[in-house]
Length: 195
Image (cartoon, rainbow, N blue to C red; front, side):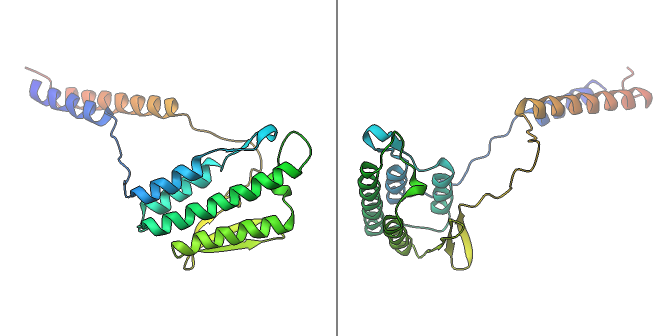
């Protein structure tokens, strides 16, 4: 009887323990070098700084963690493209009046130069960059499979609903407590708790 209860409570405790998930760490040193370059903020002097959005960097990390196995030569070529793009952004920011530089307001020639550099970088790892000038949408594909898309996945239409981690934990604890209580009542009714 006591053994049954001990096993029952042990199972309930094991179910409540958090389990850690480990992501694949298939990012080699060359890919880490490219990611470090992407994560570096570009100082635009009095115009502030420009940082690649974290969601874009996360997309690159996810791609690199997959089947991509970048060589040192590919990484060097990609970093060269990034540095040339940074030089264009710095040059154009110096020409703009005002306190803040807006990447969306780049002149057409500068935008095309940066897109060409982006395609050159994508070519290094067999990706294709597509740009729609009307919508400003950029899609990077591996064959026909999109790897990156700067369009919003879900458009906000109303109220935002968020589920807090605390809420989830409390809900799990309540469910496990109720399940343990039900098992206790069933065990008591079936005479499993008597001496």
